[in-house]
Image 1 (cartoon, rainbow, N blue to C red):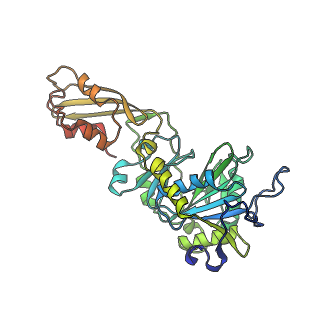
Image 2: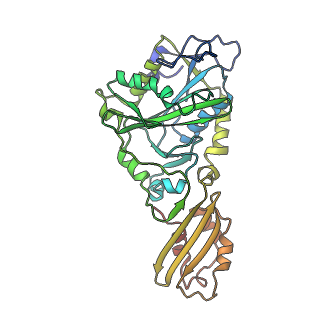
Image 3: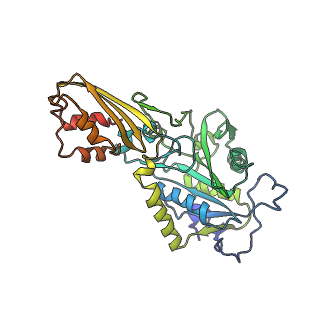
Amino acid sequence: MLPGPLLGGSRIRSCPSPMSSSLPAPELSAPDAPPPSPDDARAAPLVLIDNEGVTDPTLNLALEEWTLRNLDPQYRYLLFYVNEPSIIIGRNQNTLEEINRAYVEDRNVRVVRRMSGGGAVYHDEGNLNFSFMTDYKPGRLHNFNRFTRPLRRVLASMGVEAELEGRNDLVAGDGRKISGNAQFSTPRRMFSHGTLMFNTDRKALARALDVTPDKIDSKAHQSVRKRVANISEVGGRVYDVPTFRRLLVDGLFPQDETPVYTLRSDEWDAVEDLAERRYRRWAWNVGASPPFDVRRRERFEEGEVDVRLGIEDGKIDRIQIYGDFLGTWGTTAPLEHHLRGTPYAPEALRTKLAGVDVSPLLGGLANDDFLALLYEEG
């Protein structure tokens, strides 16, 4: 049983496990959903997933993927979750192009890559996220109207008129974005998920995603920044996020009882394992970025140092060091060779250069200055 303050008290009950073949199919479907296709006698029943109040973005993304791949496909599933401050990177994005690294590291903002494409989004406790999971069908892929229409209807009942703009954004009446959406599919299943900016810290959002577009050249998909608004600002009523969530659930499940799936402890163990294997790994969150080039150049007392880097799979694949410094070795080739294959991350670079004195090669430049140049913060 879900706690009442989160999801409407006595209206909510736990349903039997949808993984059980003996479970009778509840007569449910999302309100205002498109009619089923001729080859589908009725829409699959919709079941709410209980994430038990988890706010760890790595665990919530793992829960979403695990649900998609493992729960009984005769059901559709809906997951709501709130994350602690985090940046969720699109599958085809270069992480370093999307984040303000100095701000992220200073504020301990989590950075996690998701399975779906699209742009980077900022999450915090004022942002409610949703994910609809269903069978894959060609007509459903990229059909954001289908998946957002029930949400728009419920938002309208709260006094928030939202329209689908472009392919995948929900905007308020004044044209400001309140929700971004993306999708992921396997050959048999898919999810369509998105954000609902209820009371997000917009200053933190702007700072976390404020990237200086100077020294990174990449073919990765970059986010398009749009004017944004909080739902609490454009709606006619004032709620907190738990109340907002409850109203959405009430609107999407108008019947007396909402079927809820609560994971067993062994299933949570599997979700935790997936979070460890994918969503908490540097290789996924940063290393999976498309190849990109970096140029770092600065003038020191010892002379100008100009570093050109080619990053592939999150590691230094190519490096050339130029400048007018007076290196006593006459070449920087040994240092370049030493750094190739190193993960492009501050601690990895620091570890790689531990015990190495770069000053003879770089005209007396100190290791700390060279490290700061290699991986400039911010």
